[in-house]
Image 1 (cartoon, helix red, strand yellow):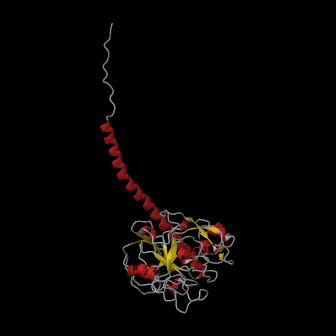
Image 2 (cartoon, helix red, strand yellow):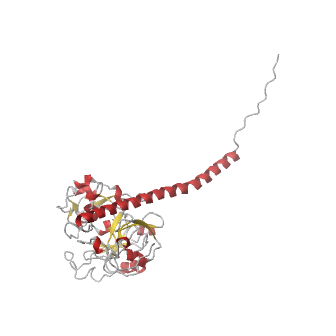
Image 3 (cartoon, one colour):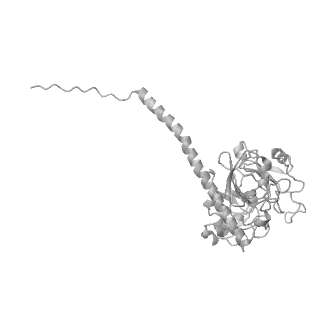
Length: 360
């Protein structure tokens, strides 16, 4: 007996149009998801950056409690070559016990100039990365091969930092940290919390900055992003490099109060000689362009910094959209919008300017 065969409809795959529709839908969903993922990642990086600065402030408070003053550049003499940074001086108060065996404050950090050759075992300490001192949003390399002794010595590695201590406004000749500034740090400063008469909550202690770019052209940086990472280099013009001047600053060089006039003014100066890119190159060194900053430029300024023999104006910048983190002397950390009024921003950078600050 013959049984009737069951009927099965022919199998049918996806048509090309259907596949394209599905792919398009997936593409739209991915396009909607990626910004949310990136925003979540940036929020996490901002939180980590804020936590880093809180740890730095905690170390600063412990240092001040122990020494009755804040750390200052430099701990070992006033050599123009630079010496131990405020971060090196606060090393006993980080959770970096291994550094303590490699930092000897009874010896110089370097010998020679610009920046000099690291003295053993400081060469090993200088190359040691400290996670607390780097912003997770920084996308440039964090190890700097620096040629010592003005280009005639060996190349030595420095581990970089995205954080710096406030040297004040930098207006006029206050960028010269060989004499007291209106901030909380300069060479040989002995500022205790009692000297911060504006109030600890109204005075900046630390802020972020972007790392510099070593491979720079002597010509003008082509983009704003590049100018935020490079410095105008003005030839040393001090009357006597071995002595502090009677008045601060270089001979005949006073920075305009308006930063919009700054770039043209510096380029027009007879001593302007191009660009340099060692911003933040070494956490261990007290050179101001490595571990100091000023409130001369507003946050995220596209107007480049200026340095001469290490002294100068160095802005607060970051890869966080819209502004930078600033740690105040009371230990609080906040995000300062790049649109902040310049007068308010500079008032935050002074320890005793008697300005009235409002919340921002």
